[in-house]
Each structure stands twice: as structure tokens, then as C-alpha cells.
Length: 445
Ligand code: NDP
Ligand code: 2IT
Image (cartoon, rainbow, N blue to C red; front, side):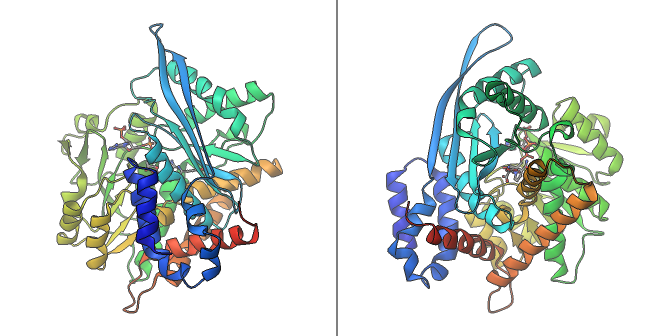
């Protein structure tokens, strides 16, 4: 393949999808060499069949708001690739959601899921519905309306959705209830469920914990540890909260958290008690991060900015795509950052990745370091199939093993002649080869 040509062709056929183009470009740029060692791949045009989703469902979602108005949103499910297992990936509810963003996420998910060692293909779905400012009754009616279309296309051996931005335990519960009502079947068709109806212990924690397990493995290659390090975290949602918790458990100091309006910086560090306040603020009160400074006045709130200009040893972007740009990466490097581990999907822009890699910073792409979430989703599917529940120790030990195994694979496939580990290349090559071999064995579709 000629990566540039493949990309140009995709851009022409699918214009106005910049995030999808960005994700494809990053993968093609790093797997081209390995791909071209296998002429049998090109003979069956494997690359196009891997870049273009198997199928896309698009539908209108109609729901009733609390004032009695009828509202419409768009709903989507992208089933990207099921060569190694049932389609699997989260659902995002956010006003920014569009087809291009979900295509990038489904594409990335395919490689991420391959890295986990579990049998899961790649998918993603969502809606431009924003739960922000909506009542729980409105969220429930929306979830029921969304599932009224989606339920026909998913199933425990076909496609298993989960949470993502704007979709947590509450939304998964409502969607599960709707699926059960429409189909009259109690199935492990979603992951991230509550414990009472088939959820797994450690699933809420898994993405954040896994990101920090991966970070720890990266630091270990340099003989360093998390204890004593200052850490910048963006986001204040599921991934950010549990990344912060694990950093604290391992003796690190969390300096920042953020939401889409701004960030807070606490010069004394966000300790356990303060993190409990954030858990309550975000999960129960559904408040904004700026309220933190009313509670802890020695902290500052910076409106409309990202936390990356603050000085620290480690950065964990855990909010959303393209939230760390070139200028911000330069500031991190100038401030002596040692490691950047992505909890979010594609939070670092291509130009920023180049800055970090040129400076030989330890840098891991989301598809490697945030794979803990979908991994424990895979373990939830296994428990549902067995109709058993495992202990938290058991699940956490498996999560740790998976994260360290992904790290080892990145080192195996990504180490450059000077010894620097290119985790982007390592993750892409390792993730790609498994899917490619499975596709080759299964014939041309
Ligand atoms: P949540 O909805 O729980 O939290 C998202 C956080 O990011 C919030 O603080 C939100 O702020 C902020 N955010 C969302 N959109 C934007 C935006 N456009 N600009 C700035 N900030 C924004 O989501 P998660 O924590 O679950 O997801 C965070 C990231 O991690 C996403 O990239 C997701 O794809 C990825 N991820 C999630 C996994 C999971 O298991 N949940 C697994 C692997 C990856 P606000 O409240 O203002 O919207
Ligand atoms: O991006 C992701 O890996 C997720 N949102 C989790 C997907 C899942 O199926 O648990």
C-alpha cells in the first residue's frame, strides 16, 4: 500500500470527517512498513476493508422533554470490524457528536480491542443529545427512544455497547431496561451495568486505573515511579476521577482537573478528601468543576483554558479528542514533563505528538493506555456468559495483567534503534497484525 494514496482516496470519498481522517492517517503512517512486508494483504485490498466500517446505522431519535415539547436528535451505531469478536465499543452522548467523530472512535476501538487479548471487534455509537442540564426523567425518555431503534442491531454475540462521554451507569441502566422491555430477554447486551444486574466490579474504575497502570509500566522502563510526581489531569468525569484516585493511591500528587468550561489548579494537591468532594460534585450533584474553588479557596479556577501550561512531571489528558495542541505540548516539554499517558481517545493532536516524541517524552496513545475500560467490559461479558460474578481482586489482577501485557507489546513492536519506545507505532502494529491475520483467514467480505 501507499499510505498517502489510501488516505487521499478516503478523504475524497468521505469528506468533512477530519477526526476520522486524522485517526486513519496516524495508523497508516505507522503500519505501512509492516503491512508492505505482507504482499498477500494488498492482494485482497485488506487496508480499505479495515479502514471503512462494516456498516453504519443512522436514525432519528424522538423524545418528549419536561415542558411537553417534542425533541429530535440523531442516533448512530458504527459496526467497524468483527474479525476477532463481536462488535464492541461505547456510546457517546454529547452535542458535538457526528458521524466523523464516531467513525474515528470505532476505527480506534478496533485496534484497542485487539490489544486487550480479549475477543472483541470494534464499534462505537452515540447521539448529539447532551445530558447536560437535562432532568433524569428526560434522560430516561431519551435513552428509551434511542434504544427503540438500536435494539434491533445489537446482541450479546453481535454488538455490545457500553458508556463513553455523557453515558455512565445511569444511562446504561436506562438503555438496558429498554432493551429488556422491547426484546423480553435479559441478556448481557451492554457493559458498564450496575452490580445488581450483571455489572462487573472495577468497571467504573477500569479506564482510569488502567491508564495509571500503563503509566507506571512506562516509568518503570526509566527506573522511575509515580510516588512524589506532580500530575496534571484534564477532565473531571469517569476516566479523570479514577485516574486521580489511582495516582493518589500510588503516592503521586494531582494538581489539576477540568471540564469543558475551564480547569482548577490546587497548589496543595487534590487529596483523598478533596477527590471525594469531586466525586460527589460530578456524580451526585452533577455540578461544574469551578465549584471546587468555593469549597477550597486556596485553589484557582481558570476559565476557558486547559491545564497544560502548569508545571508538572506527568500529564494525563482524560477529557476528549484534540485537547492538547502543539503549543501546549511545547509548554509541557519546557516545564520538564516526563510522561504523557492518554486516558481519553486521541486527545493529543498530531503536531503535539511529534513535539513529545521529538523530545523523547514517554508518550502513550489512548488505544494502548485507556484500553482498561473496554478490557473490563470484556471481563463483564465473560462473567455474564458464565452467569457468575468475580471478586474485585480477581478483576483488578486481570486488568493489571492486560495493561502490562499491552505495554510489553508496545515495547516489542515500537522500540526504535536508539532505544526510544514509539508507543504509537508499537500499539498500531500489534493491534493491526491480529485483526489482519483474522481477516485473512476468514475470506474476502
Ligand atoms: P465523562 O462524560 O464521564 O467525562 C467527560 C469529561 O470530559 C467531563 O469532565 C467533560 O466536561 C469533559 N469534556 C467532554 N467533552 C469535552 C470537550 N469537548 N471539551 C472539553 N472537555 C470536555 O466521560 P469519560 O470520562 O467516560 O470519557 C473521557 C474520555 O475518555 C473520552 O475521550 C472517552 O472517549 C475516553 N474513554 C472512556 C472510557 C470509559 O470507559 N468511559 C474508556 C476509554 C476511553 P463537561 O462536563 O464540561 O462536558
Ligand atoms: O473508548 C472506549 O474504550 C470506551 N468508551 C469503552 C468501551 C467499552 O465497550 O467498554
